[in-house]
Length: 379
Image 1: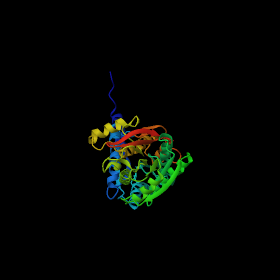
Image 2: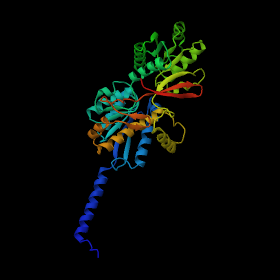
Image 3: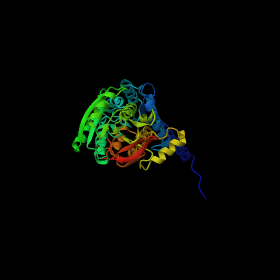
Image 4: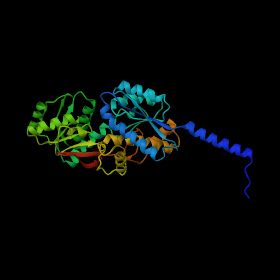
């Protein structure tokens, strides 16, 4: 016959259970800050990234959270300015969060990263491509490739895949992003045995490229690298075709879907690099897209920025789990040791700088009906 528990033992057990419950309640959620532009000039551009990070938090929590606790994503508005990003980082540093996801724009990350480095708070940016971002310190990581990698990728693609021998560069003269991409492309193209026959520029708000295209027409390059933005590229290509130029135009991630904003007429047969595409062979991409469709429906689901931010939070959550702790120091160490993380945007391994290694660039071809996947290219 089973003996009843003595009253004292019952009280002890009840006390232990109560203490365990109080301890779990005291721990609360694992808190991660997301620094994004919610207001101002960058807000529209940052919106897919916010949605991607929120999607990742939803998926993580539906699977049980991290360390047996829910993950709480706290969005802090950087107001679309470097100063706002610095203030947002200062706010995150005193909130007791485990890590920071974001910012998106390189200028915002360059302002936030020194604050977070000084606070010893790990930061993972999904899309800041400026090489200087992760050079700030050992607590700063990125999901995306860098501008210098992207410039080399497009030079190799031009030489090895398109077999081009003569190229020109047309960059934005008041944009560091564009000038650096153009510089790296030209240096790498010549290193590979190609010839840069002309380098020219235009101002960010230019709409008439007649003079630059006239110079190109006389020199007849096979490739023209335009490391600007989609609006610029679409205007350049349209005007070039109207002048009878048949050269192939190449671009970087700045083109994105904006290159099709004014319609696809005349755009067929050009190429640009980006970070993700639904047809790229990334094993976890399909489940991320399915999660997005369940949450938001199919509209706007195939934007690369969504899945870059999704991966940024996912790799933080994975590091927290591996660390077995939400201590920023332990999570930073786990992030630094990330090898072979299977993300929606590819396989992620961080080098000593906090940059991804072995992660190729997605090359897309412009056609009348939109971008078409070509390959995942690594020089």
